[in-house]
Image 1 (tube, rainbow, N blue to C red):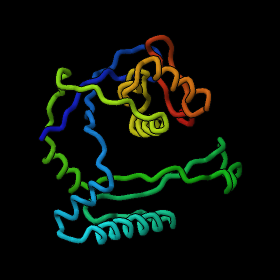
Image 2: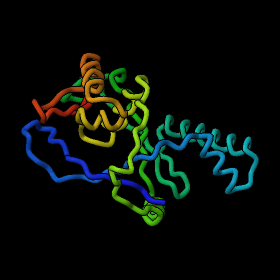
Image 3: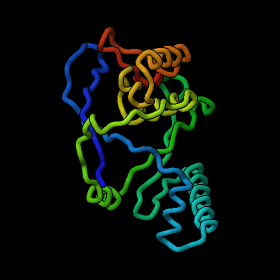
Length: 204
C-alpha cells in the first residue's frame, strides 16, 4: 500500500508575500481509532481483547503519572515522552514570575532512531492524483478547532485554504470559522490580502 502525498505552497508568516519553495505533506487517510489499534494487537499477539485494553490503559496511566512527576519517559523502541511548560505572563526577570504564572503546556513525543527507521522503510510514497480524490464529509464544528490547533503545533501557520482542505469545508465556512477563532483570541492574523496567514495567539 502507498502513502499519498501532495505538494503545497509554503505561506510567508511575515506577510511580505515572498514566494517560498513548495513543501510535501502526507494526505492522511484518516485516523486509526483505539478500538482498531486494540484489534490489531489481538491478532498479532493472540491475547484476549480485555487483556490488551488493560495493558494499554496501564501504559497510559504509568506514562501520565511519571510525566506529571517530572520524568522523561522512554517507551521501549518507540521513543521518548516529555512535558513542556509555559509562562502565562511576560517577564524578563526571574523575580517577576511567580509559581502560579507557570502552567503545563503539552506533552511532546520524540521518536527513537529505530522507530523512525522502521517507518521510513515501511513507507512507500506516491504522488496523489487529484482525479483519484473523493469528496469527504465536512468535519463536525466541535472537531475543527482541535484539528486546526494540532496543525499549528506542527506548522508555523495556516492559511484559509489549508484550513478549508484540512476540515473539508467550503472557503466561506472556513472564513467564518477563522473569524470566530480570532474573536475568541485563539489565533492571530499576519499579513494582508492573499498573503494572510494565521498563527497561535501565544506565538511570537
